[in-house]
Length: 286
Figure 1 (cartoon, rainbow, N blue to C red):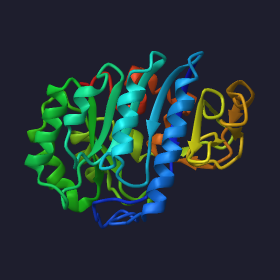
Figure 2 (cartoon, rainbow, N blue to C red):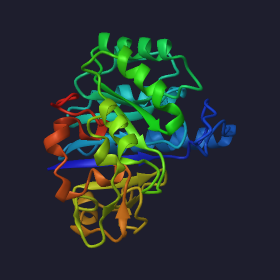
Figure 3 (cartoon, rainbow, N blue to C red):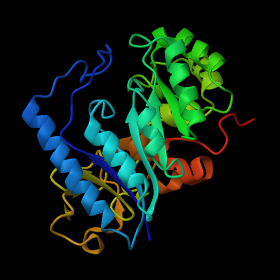
């Protein structure tokens, strides 16, 4: 049986101070970092024991995980588990990538984000090319704020054509983008309309809870990042007792890490085996 598992521990610190992020320059104290490392170690051991399942694992820390040694070590280790199909993490690519030489590049993928106010486009593209040289498949993304359109165009121009550049719709306001503005972003990201949409999900069938789970640092399980219904705890309960078919209890969903589970969208047709890393089968469809 194939499962999609997302994990978020106690880490909230980030080395960036982007104006659009509430976690800009957040600093975790030593006790929090220790707690996060211990929780991640426990989760890694739990993953190792789930060999009866084929697993996709996505790490979605509030802060930047790869500047922390315990995340790099965990990803290396998890990538070599025989029952891991994919393991990925969201990252700003601000740290050295030498550690990836120890990882299994068949399973480890990266979900990377470029923040123009924090890193030059040349340095970011160098990091992206380094990943490609190491055989690490990855997607690249940006926030689709109006003020960042030219930066996104420049990044798209410099990135290799086969490196997918996704754009996250910036504002919940449905009128934030005019049709003409949305078309400009779609030139950069052909799948931008998928993210711009706010999906009506109440009562819709979803993989969340059935074959996809969100797990926090305590091991508590909920269907996804955006539904807090408690389904159990991985350290107390068997997965087979936790998994259950569900219908969405939220009125809508407009975030990729949520709507990727929505069955009616059939996003596996677009992203194939790399759904958790947001890497499409075809990065530039006609």
